Image (cartoon, helix red, strand yellow):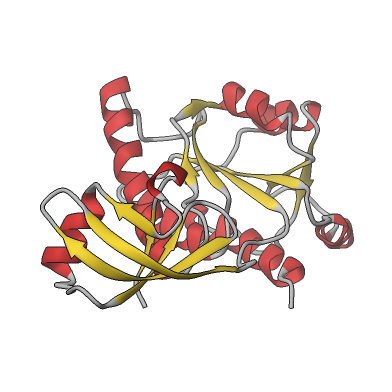
Length: 246
């Protein structure tokens, strides 16, 4: 069953008003008709099962059959601070991170990033990445659409992460798998966790030092060097396995 996201103000006691790009998707891509059932979420744990009542050029109206509370999100909030990779790797990273339960993605311009985005290009990229996040959220039956934040400089990202309960930074020179396992196991429901992933060239030693001074914990992901598009997914997969509720 197809899932769509709306804002709270679009929900009435008996009906939901779907607007924006989803109208064209419902009418012209999915070719749905009145009477067909859909799921609607408003960025929370409450999900509405509805049937389509009317379709117009501007709006799809859906009648609420019932509301149900689905706890489909991870019990901890995970923020992925991803160093800007080359090419279209960021699209892949965002898609898979959303599938694995990330709460938000923060693109980070660190020193070894090959990609340089001016303000206009960065804004357009973030808009596209947000669309990918929404598509992945629909496909993976998420209850929220993870936010893709504006591109931040490395120092800005560290400052943003300071409010989180835990910051993890995989680093190829880090040692001690036992310590890494203990850190993963210590994460509790309700906590917020930041994961810093470097670009293709990794983080410079000075950047790791700054992260540690900001409260980050260097961790190891094993003896092998992982690509930037693999490292974040590895951490997210481990956290999803450890925290997923029955």
